[in-house]
Image (cartoon, rainbow, N blue to C red; front, top):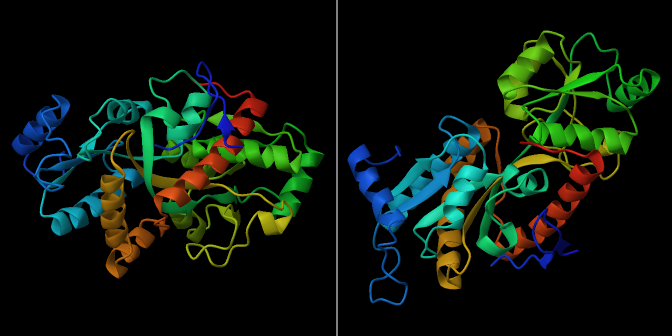
Length: 342
């Protein structure tokens, strides 16, 4: 997951990547209203950046994105001397993304999002263009998924699972958090690379999918290490491998899928930061500097690790290059599998 990517309903273009949290609700309302109305000072004024609160728009509260965003916001606020508030937007990833796509390019509205940001346009129509509306700041963190099976599955390794699936085409079911989710796409990647036939069962969220796996309704799944680990330790699931390209400190005892019979296999749930296109390079650089300073702190790395995240902290050019490869790979996978969502 060539620099050219064709979006459904969009022109083919070169990817030129151009709160309730830390303050009282009353102040958050004022901040959001001010930002939404466009009442922001231009970067050409005498006031240095930042001279007012910054908001980070992300997913619903309580999830991995929200947790990481709040840790980052707290550290940035302390360093910058301005409140950095979290603006949670539940539902589809297109909601916070569409909001930032229309925000002023002044560095005061930031998107913190995950894989669905760039995979969704290949599965349904969206009100944003990732190539035209955003600039990458940093790939902040990554969490590999882990291939887990129900204890009743007669496979103790990836190769044994592949052999089992080939001997019983269409009889193994794999669960996901929903159509188009990271674990759904990882399952489709596994099917394609292993050359096996399995049935996808979509649940309404990761927790119901894990419960379905524990209950034997499905035989395997690709959840994050953080969500699967307690169930593996309790003996309710069996872990076979991680999906990262290299072994992960989050699951050091597990081999990679790539080293277990499927060379080149790689998948992960990642978290990144973007700003609206036309944001000045000076502001992008400043934001990158501040975010990386926060997430590279030993105490923050430890908090991320406990949440099942490994810090990446890539530069904007590194993130841009990674995205080009990832988007090309994701688009092909989705097209080949014929995945569509509503």
